[in-house]
Structures are given as structure tokens and as C-alpha cells.
Length: 173
Image (cartoon, rainbow, N blue to C red; front, side):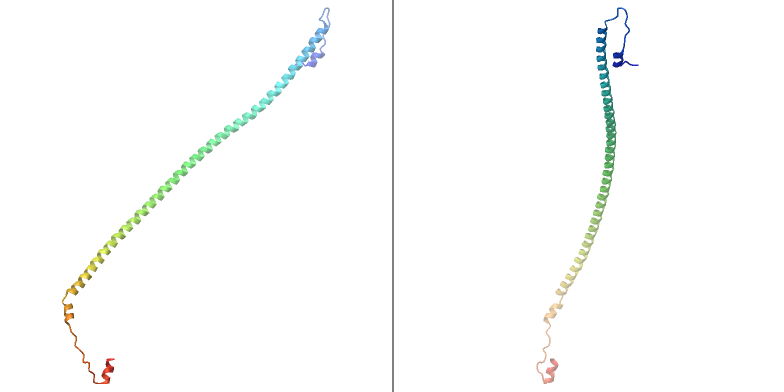
């Protein structure tokens, strides 16, 4: 059991023959009581301080643990975001490549159709040119034939302009 200032204050010593001077002992005991009370107060203050510091330490340890967990969660979330962004970019790239291939294939198909149409138009143009040339040559042959000259030399018979009767005139009208 620890000693208290009250224990020191209440302590009674037995008197012996030639003992100590009582006033000196009492003064010394009063000084011990004061110092002991001071030590006890300081001890209590320090114990309170230790409790406060331990409480703060616990609080800060809790904050540290929370921050560490938050950092780990943030890192995991960042990794997830990065992984998702990478996957999404790959998907977008694949989709873009598919679209590009489709557009290129459509363009090639259209260009082939246009080339075929051009070739068909060339063929039709040649056929038209040949037919037109043949028509013109046939017309030239007709013009160059002697039939035109015969036509130019042809003289129709002159009709009889004398009418004998009124009835003949009406027939002409």
C-alpha cells in the first residue's frame, strides 16, 4: 500500500530518551508532505497527460489506418478505372477498325460498280458510234447514188388547166 500525504501528516513517532528534536522532525515532515503532495499532483497530471496522449495516439492511429485503407481503395479504384479505360479504348479501336474496313469495302464495291458502269457505257458508246456511223454512211450512199440526179431531172407532166365545166372545177376543189 502506497503512502499518502495524510499518512505522513498523521504519523506519530514514539519518544525515546534523547530522541530527535520534535520541531525539526515536524518541519521536515511538513516539507516531505508538501513535496510528496507535489509529486502526487505531478504524477496525476502526467498520468492524465499520458491518457490524453494515448487517446490522441489512438485517434491518430485510427486516422492513419483509415487513410491507409483509403489509399489502398483509391489505388484499387485507379487501377480499375485504368483497366476499364484500357478495355474501353481497345473496344473503341476495334469498332473503329471494323467501321474503317466496312467503309473501305463499301468504297471499293462502289468503285467497282462505277468501273463496270463506265465499261458498259463505253461499250454502249462504241455500239452507238458504230450504228450512227453506219447510218451516216448509208445516208451518204443514198445521197451519192444516182437516184438524186434522176429526181432532179424528173419533170412532172403539166396538167391541163382548161376546164370545160363548172363541175370539173368543183372536183379540183
